[in-house]
Length: 178
Image 1 (cartoon, rainbow, N blue to C red):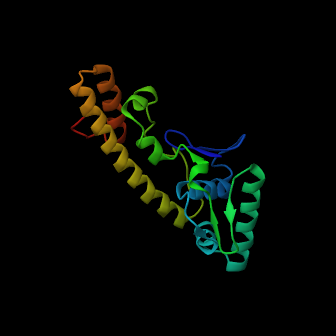
Image 2 (tube, rainbow, N blue to C red):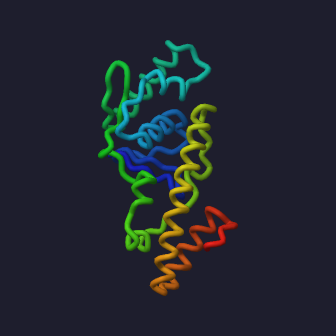
């Protein structure tokens, strides 16, 4: 399994191995495949994302090396000659799954609001993709926190109100709902 720890942290677990951003391209490929889990991603798209200024043959070779390294770490990649997929059910801790958790689970394990704090993607195309993904997740997270805050207020659970309001203000310091 692959476990994303990217809300409030910058870590990806593959089996017993912890990947951190210092392993630039291995971390980047793991992150991309885990976020896009279940999708068959063309190798050419991955090569362009990770090695945009590299000749196609060299980029394809570099990608093969990264895929080999991930498989050595235990990543359950499905591969064809043209594409790579990380199965949906092999990824834990994806932000969408965390956002979809129940109200009671949200009370037990508050979500860190910063996604991949301190992470600088190694390429411009990956940086653009990540920025769009961060915007999407933060929008969903705000919506979720506003809903949970409303529920906590209705139930007069002031500890929960404080928890959700604090989390909401970490994301959007001008939020009037909080």
